[in-house]
Length: 247
Image 1: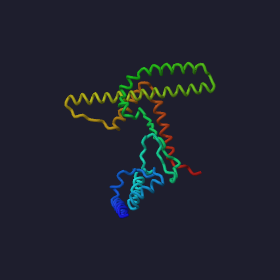
Image 2 (image 1 turned 180 degrees about the vertical axis):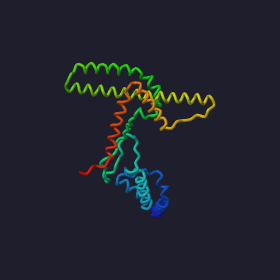
Image 3 (image 1 turned 45 degrees about the vertical axis):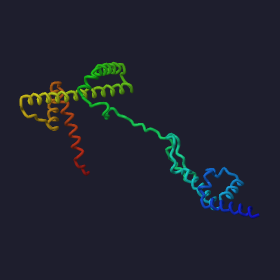
Image 4 (image 1 turned 180 degrees about the horizontal axis):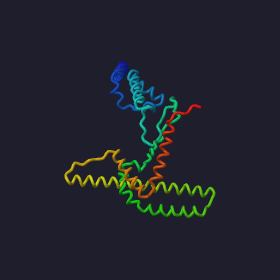
């Protein structure tokens, strides 16, 4: 009987020592307590003590909460996968599920990738278009002779008039371009002679262009018709600025 009582006291002391030092008694315990049955939990509590068992349960629950990722701060593994949203937050109506590359329109007229516009190089490169325009103009004239009246003749007349206007505008642009080249050559020659270069103002350039235009109109005997149209246009502008007569 005395030997049995001594063994019981020794077992109780060992149990109390294990309860005071949970780390020494739990080194062989499973890491996840959710896999244990109810009987195994009771056996674990009786083996390590109530205090150590509570500490073990708290540590296991804290580890679970720390390992669970939050929905708002969860990182998407694949960038093409839709973002995981919480069911408690209302999903917006317009949202970007998959990123789409925005297409940017490129206009070659205003893009630096197409290079700088040089009128001289452009005219030399597309000089063959002048022959094509001349052939189209002659074809329209032939079609105009076939249609004596009707709506088709009016369309052909408007087309021929538009072609002639484009041709005149192109000739005027070439004339101004030749004038600029002439002024540039004269400026370069004066600089080679030691003179200080002088750059004309825009108003002076317009006056020189107008003088060249008058010379061209005088050679082609179209100066009078041009001046009469100019007078009628100016008279119409002046008439608009006059006060209305009271009747």
